[in-house]
Image 1 (cartoon, rainbow, N blue to C red):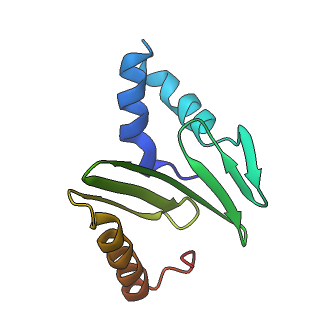
Image 2 (cartoon, helix red, strand yellow; image 1 turned 90 degrees about the vertical axis):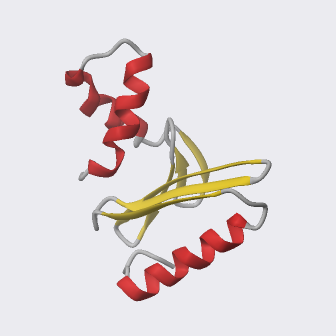
Length: 112
């Protein structure tokens, strides 16, 4: 499993958990391991939605608050992903349009 996308997230969390760098690989695996099943091929880890599709593992985590929208999506096997953040009520619509455009231009096989 390739995990470079997640390293900064694990470091940020680990600073609050009184861990050492040797703990980060174990924490990363735990965060990306299914903890709760939500539906067919769809689980939740400790911080991410995990979708198994066509022998690919796609992870993601959205966020929003009044006036702000963001999302992190990635495919572990492809080593590809994206993160966007907006500061506007229409930001989600813009973010999804940019995501779809990027996936089309880059021709991501894992994007549907």
